[in-house]
Length: 275
Picture 1 (cartoon, rainbow, N blue to C red):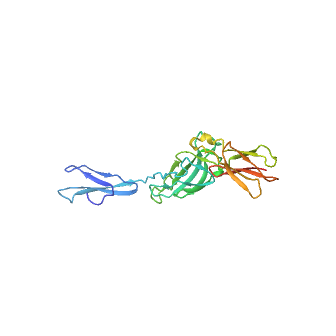
Picture 2 (picture 1 turned 45 degrees about the vertical axis):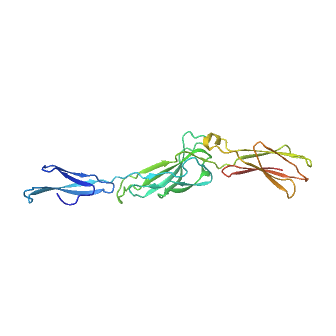
Picture 3 (picture 1 turned 60 degrees about the vertical axis):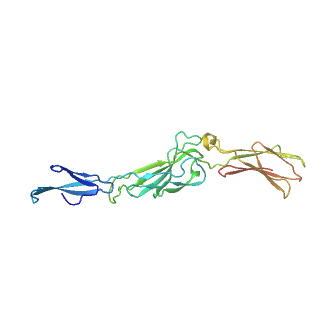
């Protein structure tokens, strides 16, 4: 035969034989109609031939888009508003729409059950960037982000009507939400002291009770800071270790204030004060 075959097509014939075949392995960009003309020609008399037109249809196949959660991807301890990123790509070049969901790993310790996945954002472009206010979810561990990327169903051919496909990915491991300030307790032996008498001050701080169950995400010991004004114009401040007792003396009469400040590793601050 002669003419031009489609790309990825090959005609095989056996020399001296009346048999031949067309091999056509179309790729994903070759959907469409291909009229293939087969000719049988008499070698001794080329004027004698017979042809047959065979229509070949390559149907379009839509492929799943790919999406990957980049952040938060596990191990983070979060608070406030955080960025969520999950870029998506469609192998057929179709436009995609990305949705972000907050989910909770089964059996997660230290947080109220989330129940059904919560929608963080929907209708995002392929870049897959949104902002998540973690204060809309209970504090706890075992959270993950699920990203869903849905294509247009065109399979690379505008106007092709096919089922839309959705690719899914989740954070590789769980992250934590912490939006609650620690508890601070400032202790003094009593409220009334004599002039030059020693004032004994102690401080205590605790964070969320569920955090120790979170394994590698256990918080570090919370730093304690005591500030005081016992004499006019001479304020003082110093760090206080857990269980440490601070002895103070005043050289002036009247009311004095002592304040304990506790800051956790997320920057949440709690203050307790006595007078």
